[in-house]
Image (tube, rainbow, N blue to C red; front, side, top):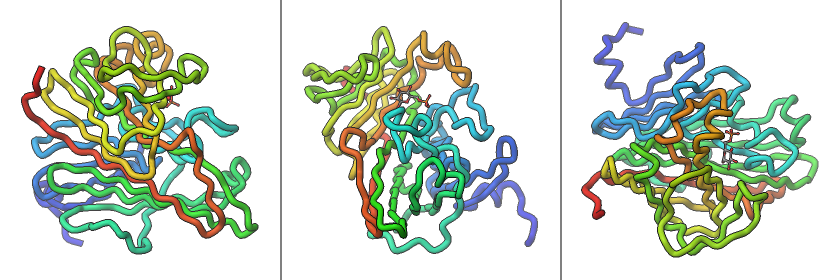
Length: 309
Ligand code: BG6
């Protein structure tokens, strides 16, 4: 293969490079200049940049890129268990396994035109089987389209040969980069019921106003949420829009000061510059019989404009 100059390689729409600690990373570049980076470790999106090259995701400066520690920031995938709602490690094991390329994925009903994409796959190892005794194929397509639209589609199939169903919970644990958490507002979750993780998952109803962040940790699982949620960053004058399918719940998390200090892979002050809004299915776990497939999709887009105050 001919050697390529840097400028040639920069133009390649899909590239696989060795990144931190020798871990492999896929880089997708859209023709208008936006990009996405995905570590095969965890199928973890660690960077999403708009057409101006601005980073849209938060990645901790203290993130540890060393298995089995999950990467702090970006978009971890929580499967087959959200949080500690079961016997597995927190958020399941998909986020700290090495994924492979899915060279021949079954056809997608999703339109791939004008998009650059990669298909990844996770199958359990014998070791995984010991902690979660089920065979599955988890296929993930990550696609980047015009306007820096980032689409993630998960297809999870039960491939058990013993006739047994399995049940799981799931989340795309997106860490958005924000200028200042006190200037951020989430719209689309007002008046909904939520389980408060800071209060033993007691159920409450959100008040009528959009959600803001003022003085302490927020860790809430909003239930039966709309398919569209907006995260408005007033200082940056931009809005993230999350569209989701198959994912009725939305988790909102900011660790705030005290918890930030307790996390080794998170800077003490970094809570000011991030917000997790996670498209999820938590309250009603998914059960698949052998041969059945579940699909869950999130699309992230960005609107940059002057917002009304
Ligand atoms: C959120 C949970 O999704 O993830 C929080 O609701 C949790 O309870 C947070 O603290 C971070 O989890 P982890 O395992 O990545 O530290």
